[in-house]
Length: 596
Image 1: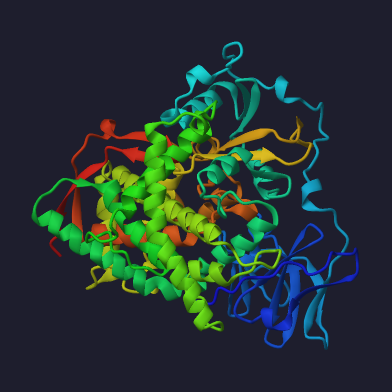
Image 2: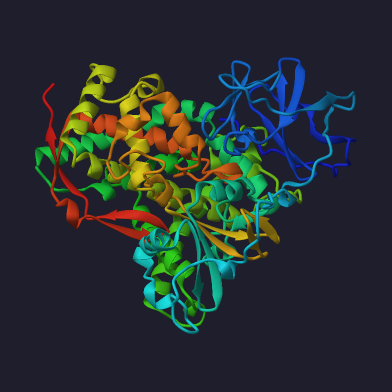
């Protein structure tokens, strides 16, 4: 992998004037180069000996094109794979065309871009001109109690359920009072799409997330904002770009093969399986290998207490985000002690890796980074300084926690839902037999790409069981959106499930039906209207989407190729628990060997 950091703009944009954006060596033909000029995202491409510059935002769902790929002369969006001609900007299979800018390389060896004058995105929130502008106080919502509002009605583990219930009662845009703070809640696709497209300029991740993560010393790219986010995001997106995932695929299959051997042993012994724990072993091994270059092998018992330490961090993060009063700042608690021990254990494991990465770079300064930790160790911040060891530690934790929990939960939810539908399990097994033939699992990415029904199961699972049911945001400016006056600093909770389970948007929405995703045109429409946003949308859409889907398809196709899954727990006993992600509780199965 080559994950050198992308520099930011080297001088401010002057309307209609040339702006120096990079040295020519930094714009290579293997990947897009992204830069922000005067509030506008721009992507620069080198097409053989020629340079091209376009708007850096995909017209589909606002994806950052700089995080995409260059394939056969086409610029591929990282969010949903829209392809644009690298010379003209014209979309393949559609009428859309990227706005082009003047670009040139001068004799001084630098690349310059000239953009047309446009207002910064932060001021581009569409005002409502169709009628009277409402204030937040005009919106419906639960009444609550004096002083504390609805605080007595909310429980951390069922927080998402309460918000979804109120959405059914009060509509897709409502508000509630939490101890004197008015919270805006939205499940309207059109409103959500506007908001998510305007990140990070008009909307940012809720500042409380930054405060809590900073206090836990794990503030990384997930909660970073501004230039800090841009510089870190480019590294993460590059590490997770399709070209790098293709190179990583053999290691991904090695981890899957270990899991297969473990599951065969469990089947031989007829042991009851805690599926979420099994899926987390897999995702921890994948994430640590991809982001840290380490094969910890928790599947066969390696990795020490890594998985246990990671399992402590996320629930405490969730509890602190939802707490009305930050008691942990002043009161010693058992939870605080557990967190301190978990972070100390993670640091004891990660600090030697950081130190070794620093030493390697000192000895080989021209070495190309081969994983995310190494890329961040050699990258420069916007101020020109190297990232601190603390920043490396925080981002490593971000990657491990996010990579472990979300994908593992989706795999678990998928198996749980399929267990209720024997016909779907049979079709998964049939597809695995036909595609994999004599193989136990998808040995190469080309085989995995053919497991279309398995991918449809993944999409349907994320529709009904989104592991990120809430996106926590905060407005960065006063604005009017969809007829609603929104002051700066307003907290907004975007709900991802209500629109995806609304009969207006989906036929028979409560039914688990992977078939709805098999028609390419229908699937595109479902994604285009912003009713299905399990990975978010816009410039800050989850950069690990491609990796997550790859992991889910690989595990599910391997599972139903080799085993018959027998539920060991009643469907009603399985519950949703909100701990920043939506976890499945109580999914237990038994595995039976399949006879081919």
